[in-house]
Length: 241
Image (cartoon, rainbow, N blue to C red; front, side, top):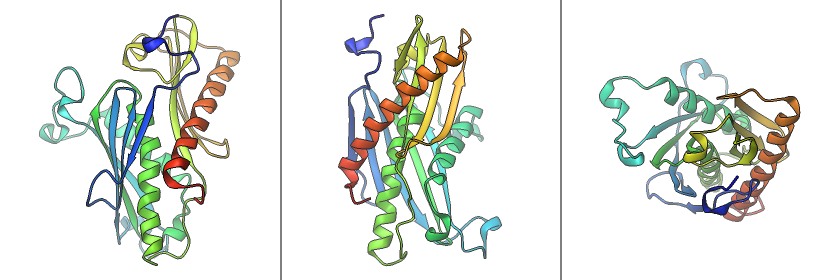
Protein backbone atom coordinates (compact mmCIF):
# COMPACT_ATOMS: atom_id res chain seq x y z
CA UNK A 1 0.00 0.00 0.00
CA UNK A 2 1.42 3.38 -1.03
CA UNK A 3 0.97 6.11 1.60
CA UNK A 4 0.79 9.85 0.92
CA UNK A 5 4.27 11.36 0.66
CA UNK A 6 5.63 7.77 0.40
CA UNK A 7 5.74 7.36 4.16
CA UNK A 8 6.61 3.97 5.59
CA UNK A 9 3.92 2.10 7.53
CA UNK A 10 5.72 2.88 10.82
CA UNK A 11 6.68 6.47 9.99
CA UNK A 12 5.29 9.62 11.62
CA UNK A 13 4.43 12.67 9.58
CA UNK A 14 6.97 15.51 9.94
CA UNK A 15 6.39 17.14 13.34
CA UNK A 16 7.20 20.75 14.15
CA UNK A 17 6.70 22.21 17.63
CA UNK A 18 6.91 25.97 18.25
CA UNK A 19 6.83 26.86 21.99
CA UNK A 20 5.74 30.24 23.42
CA UNK A 21 3.63 30.85 20.33
CA UNK A 22 1.28 33.36 21.99
CA UNK A 23 2.05 36.23 24.32
CA UNK A 24 -0.52 36.09 27.10
CA UNK A 25 -0.87 32.37 27.82
CA UNK A 26 1.14 30.94 30.72
CA UNK A 27 2.27 28.23 28.30
CA UNK A 28 1.65 27.87 24.58
CA UNK A 29 2.64 25.70 21.65
CA UNK A 30 1.84 25.48 17.97
CA UNK A 31 2.17 21.84 16.97
CA UNK A 32 2.26 20.81 13.32
CA UNK A 33 1.95 17.15 12.37
CA UNK A 34 2.00 17.03 8.61
CA UNK A 35 -0.81 19.34 7.49
CA UNK A 36 -2.57 19.24 10.87
CA UNK A 37 -1.93 22.34 12.98
CA UNK A 38 -3.16 22.88 16.53
CA UNK A 39 -2.61 25.83 18.86
CA UNK A 40 -2.40 24.59 22.46
CA UNK A 41 -2.43 27.06 25.34
CA UNK A 42 -2.35 26.68 29.13
CA UNK A 43 -3.58 29.29 31.60
CA UNK A 44 -3.65 28.99 35.39
CA UNK A 45 -6.48 30.14 37.65
CA UNK A 46 -6.19 30.37 41.43
CA UNK A 47 -9.40 28.45 42.02
CA UNK A 48 -10.77 24.96 41.59
CA UNK A 49 -14.18 23.43 40.82
CA UNK A 50 -16.55 23.34 43.81
CA UNK A 51 -15.99 19.62 44.44
CA UNK A 52 -12.27 20.31 45.12
CA UNK A 53 -12.59 23.37 47.39
CA UNK A 54 -10.76 22.88 50.66
CA UNK A 55 -9.09 19.65 49.57
CA UNK A 56 -5.69 21.16 48.74
CA UNK A 57 -5.88 19.46 45.34
CA UNK A 58 -5.77 21.10 41.91
CA UNK A 59 -7.36 20.35 38.57
CA UNK A 60 -6.46 20.22 34.88
CA UNK A 61 -9.22 20.57 32.30
CA UNK A 62 -9.46 21.09 28.57
CA UNK A 63 -11.48 22.75 25.83
CA UNK A 64 -11.14 21.85 22.14
CA UNK A 65 -12.47 23.42 18.98
CA UNK A 66 -12.18 23.27 15.22
CA UNK A 67 -11.79 26.78 13.83
CA UNK A 68 -14.19 27.56 10.96
CA UNK A 69 -11.57 27.39 8.19
CA UNK A 70 -9.75 24.36 9.58
CA UNK A 71 -11.62 22.01 7.24
CA UNK A 72 -12.39 22.02 3.52
CA UNK A 73 -15.96 23.14 4.11
CA UNK A 74 -16.52 25.76 6.80
CA UNK A 75 -17.06 24.36 10.29
CA UNK A 76 -19.57 26.60 12.12
CA UNK A 77 -18.48 27.79 15.55
CA UNK A 78 -20.23 25.70 18.17
CA UNK A 79 -20.85 28.82 20.24
CA UNK A 80 -23.28 30.00 17.57
CA UNK A 81 -25.21 26.74 17.88
CA UNK A 82 -25.52 27.12 21.63
CA UNK A 83 -24.04 23.72 22.48
CA UNK A 84 -20.97 21.61 21.77
CA UNK A 85 -21.14 18.41 19.74
CA UNK A 86 -20.71 14.94 21.18
CA UNK A 87 -17.40 14.65 19.31
CA UNK A 88 -16.05 17.85 20.87
CA UNK A 89 -17.15 16.80 24.35
CA UNK A 90 -15.47 13.42 23.97
CA UNK A 91 -12.19 14.95 22.75
CA UNK A 92 -12.13 17.55 25.54
CA UNK A 93 -12.58 14.84 28.13
CA UNK A 94 -9.88 12.71 26.51
CA UNK A 95 -7.34 15.55 26.59
CA UNK A 96 -8.15 16.42 30.21
CA UNK A 97 -8.00 12.80 31.38
CA UNK A 98 -4.70 12.22 29.62
CA UNK A 99 -3.02 15.27 31.16
CA UNK A 100 -4.36 14.59 34.66
CA UNK A 101 -2.77 11.14 34.51
CA UNK A 102 0.72 12.68 34.72
CA UNK A 103 0.07 15.56 37.15
CA UNK A 104 0.33 15.37 40.94
CA UNK A 105 -2.73 17.43 41.90
CA UNK A 106 -1.61 17.94 45.50
CA UNK A 107 1.67 19.50 44.35
CA UNK A 108 -0.34 21.73 42.03
CA UNK A 109 -2.42 22.97 44.96
CA UNK A 110 -5.86 24.52 44.66
CA UNK A 111 -5.39 25.83 41.14
CA UNK A 112 -6.95 24.98 37.81
CA UNK A 113 -4.92 24.74 34.63
CA UNK A 114 -7.10 25.44 31.61
CA UNK A 115 -5.89 23.81 28.41
CA UNK A 116 -7.32 25.19 25.17
CA UNK A 117 -6.76 23.35 21.90
CA UNK A 118 -7.77 25.25 18.77
CA UNK A 119 -7.41 23.35 15.51
CA UNK A 120 -6.18 25.78 12.86
CA UNK A 121 -5.99 23.13 10.14
CA UNK A 122 -7.30 19.57 10.28
CA UNK A 123 -5.81 16.71 8.30
CA UNK A 124 -6.32 13.81 10.71
CA UNK A 125 -4.98 13.21 14.20
CA UNK A 126 -6.18 16.47 15.75
CA UNK A 127 -6.97 14.90 19.14
CA UNK A 128 -3.62 13.15 19.41
CA UNK A 129 -1.73 16.27 18.30
CA UNK A 130 -3.72 18.20 20.92
CA UNK A 131 -2.56 15.86 23.68
CA UNK A 132 1.08 15.92 22.56
CA UNK A 133 1.13 19.71 22.21
CA UNK A 134 -0.90 20.38 25.35
CA UNK A 135 1.58 18.47 27.47
CA UNK A 136 4.28 20.93 26.45
CA UNK A 137 2.04 23.95 27.04
CA UNK A 138 1.15 22.56 30.47
CA UNK A 139 4.80 22.05 31.41
CA UNK A 140 5.73 25.56 30.27
CA UNK A 141 2.95 27.04 32.41
CA UNK A 142 3.87 24.99 35.48
CA UNK A 143 7.57 25.74 35.09
CA UNK A 144 6.67 29.44 35.12
CA UNK A 145 4.75 28.91 38.38
CA UNK A 146 7.69 27.11 39.93
CA UNK A 147 10.16 29.80 38.89
CA UNK A 148 7.86 32.40 40.45
CA UNK A 149 7.88 30.26 43.64
CA UNK A 150 4.11 29.90 43.49
CA UNK A 151 4.55 26.14 43.74
CA UNK A 152 7.47 24.41 45.45
CA UNK A 153 7.74 21.23 43.42
CA UNK A 154 7.18 20.63 39.73
CA UNK A 155 3.93 18.61 39.70
CA UNK A 156 4.36 16.67 36.45
CA UNK A 157 5.64 13.15 37.06
CA UNK A 158 6.09 11.78 33.52
CA UNK A 159 6.05 12.73 29.86
CA UNK A 160 2.90 12.17 27.81
CA UNK A 161 2.14 11.93 24.09
CA UNK A 162 -0.46 10.40 21.82
CA UNK A 163 -0.69 9.08 18.28
CA UNK A 164 -3.15 7.37 15.95
CA UNK A 165 -2.74 3.93 14.42
CA UNK A 166 -5.00 1.99 12.11
CA UNK A 167 -5.54 -0.57 9.39
CA UNK A 168 -5.84 0.59 5.79
CA UNK A 169 -6.12 -1.94 2.96
CA UNK A 170 -5.14 -4.64 5.42
CA UNK A 171 -1.90 -2.90 6.45
CA UNK A 172 -1.30 -1.60 10.02
CA UNK A 173 -0.04 1.99 9.81
CA UNK A 174 1.09 4.75 12.17
CA UNK A 175 -0.18 8.34 12.33
CA UNK A 176 -3.10 8.44 9.91
CA UNK A 177 -3.79 11.57 7.90
CA UNK A 178 -7.34 12.35 6.82
CA UNK A 179 -7.34 10.49 3.51
CA UNK A 180 -6.22 7.35 5.37
CA UNK A 181 -8.46 7.87 8.39
CA UNK A 182 -11.52 8.24 6.17
CA UNK A 183 -10.99 4.78 4.64
CA UNK A 184 -9.50 2.94 7.63
CA UNK A 185 -10.86 -0.48 8.48
CA UNK A 186 -9.62 -0.06 12.07
CA UNK A 187 -8.95 3.27 13.79
CA UNK A 188 -7.16 3.76 17.13
CA UNK A 189 -5.96 6.64 19.26
CA UNK A 190 -3.43 5.82 21.96
CA UNK A 191 -2.02 8.00 24.73
CA UNK A 192 1.02 6.80 26.64
CA UNK A 193 3.50 8.06 29.23
CA UNK A 194 7.24 8.32 28.78
CA UNK A 195 7.69 5.27 31.01
CA UNK A 196 5.56 3.23 28.59
CA UNK A 197 2.32 3.08 30.59
CA UNK A 198 -0.98 3.45 28.75
CA UNK A 199 -3.29 6.32 29.62
CA UNK A 200 -5.96 5.68 27.02
CA UNK A 201 -6.61 3.22 24.19
CA UNK A 202 -9.49 4.08 21.89
CA UNK A 203 -9.93 1.37 19.27
CA UNK A 204 -12.78 0.88 16.81
CA UNK A 205 -13.44 -1.59 14.04
CA UNK A 206 -14.75 0.99 11.59
CA UNK A 207 -15.18 -1.36 8.63
CA UNK A 208 -13.76 -4.61 9.96
CA UNK A 209 -12.94 -6.40 13.18
CA UNK A 210 -9.39 -6.96 14.45
CA UNK A 211 -7.64 -9.77 16.27
CA UNK A 212 -5.57 -9.76 19.44
CA UNK A 213 -2.46 -10.30 17.33
CA UNK A 214 -3.33 -7.24 15.24
CA UNK A 215 -4.01 -5.27 18.43
CA UNK A 216 -0.49 -6.05 19.61
CA UNK A 217 0.89 -4.78 16.29
CA UNK A 218 -1.08 -1.55 16.72
CA UNK A 219 0.26 -1.09 20.24
CA UNK A 220 3.85 -1.65 19.09
CA UNK A 221 3.42 0.89 16.28
CA UNK A 222 1.92 3.41 18.70
CA UNK A 223 4.71 2.95 21.24
CA UNK A 224 7.33 3.55 18.56
CA UNK A 225 5.62 6.76 17.43
CA UNK A 226 5.00 8.01 20.96
CA UNK A 227 8.63 7.53 21.99
CA UNK A 228 9.66 9.60 18.96
CA UNK A 229 7.18 12.31 19.92
CA UNK A 230 8.44 12.32 23.52
CA UNK A 231 11.99 12.73 22.25
CA UNK A 232 10.78 15.86 20.44
CA UNK A 233 9.05 17.09 23.59
CA UNK A 234 12.30 16.67 25.52
CA UNK A 235 14.18 18.67 22.90
CA UNK A 236 11.70 21.53 23.40
CA UNK A 237 11.40 21.37 27.18
CA UNK A 238 14.88 20.22 28.13
CA UNK A 239 15.94 16.90 29.60
CA UNK A 240 15.78 18.25 33.18
CA UNK A 241 11.99 17.87 33.16
